[in-house]
Length: 146
Image (cartoon, rainbow, N blue to C red; front, side, top):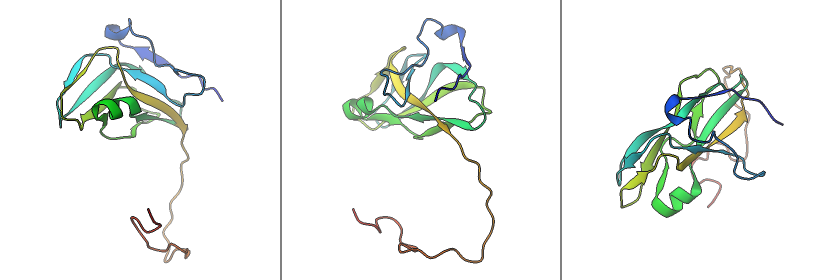
């Protein structure tokens, strides 16, 4: 399924390509840094992607890490996955965190994250005196094995 989504590029980033899929089988659109930034070892930084987007009602944008940055540098998205709501029209920005031991220089135009557009289902919650029993019941973290 294809959905057409309007995107507004900020003047400072008009020379950069808009987010795009690297291969026909890619789930995420690559997000590029619209600015240079330093992410110190053990620190985090907000990096602008240089655009705003109008995601349709019924969908959300999920900002996810790039596995190559995580493997090579220990750099990932701090609030992964970050959510871009359908009614948000501000600048898309990514919070990168550096779990590595060396500072990481984000170069303008570098691929820093990916954006997955996903459908959203709204539910109505209702209170109940009890919940249906299951085999797992209240077993929490690690309960089903490792």
